[in-house]
Image 1 (cartoon, one colour):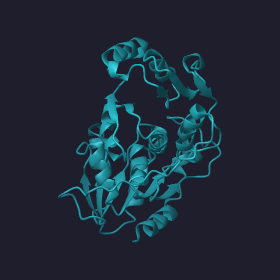
Image 2 (cartoon, helix red, strand yellow; image 1 turned 135 degrees about the vertical axis):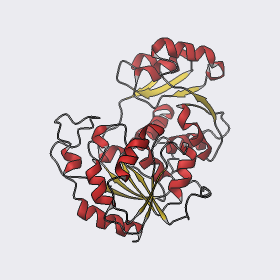
Image 3 (cartoon, helix red, strand yellow; image 1 turned 90 degrees about the horizontal axis):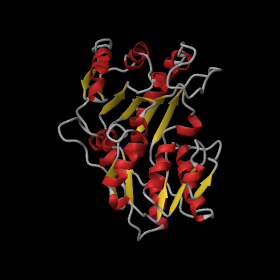
Length: 313
């Protein structure tokens, strides 16, 4: 969701050098940007707390004294990093005692998508409506060799770090058993191998299943998603990656605010599966009521029909 912001900023400052501080696992994604950037890996586990940030700053002198530091995460620590890097201008949204650390600040806009919220930071810095807020161009990616024929397989992501965004396995079984004679690739991290295996033991044998959890880095995953017939996924990172690369995406959304974080992409076709329950969106990572009604009450019969139509089956 930050890619349109990166693209717009590169268009605004075409001769500038860009340094992007990013989690190590996401470093390969920077290859999808139309213009190259320098990447600096940062993970809070390696540099914990404010002392860790000070240590990180000492180890990365090339990032110090930048002309502008755009602070996308709404955390105190991210604003503190820009302050410690001695960036001349530090741009971000107020809140969490961040205002004193920022030179250009604003309240975050309301009722807009997160990608637009990021883009708005460029307007905060330039003090004008930015003329370049383009859709991010869909990356052109080669298919993965020896995995499956392009356009003939379906990618399934039954995982999410937040329990309020994980469709129960029984629901996944109902959804996948509505298909016949399809090839499914189940994705996830190495820690989610057993979760995928548990689902594979429940589903009908009329389809073929292959567990790819832990076998693809994020760039290989992007290639897999881009050449699929379609993607069925929980609300998670792979849902957004699938939309970015122009896939057909069916995403189940429970606790999240759909208008704020629904996956989007210039060439993607995104279908949202959600339930009309009074407690949603609570945007909590764990269901505060203990019922998970936002996912348990999904109409999967209708969802299955809609997914079949979306995938051309």
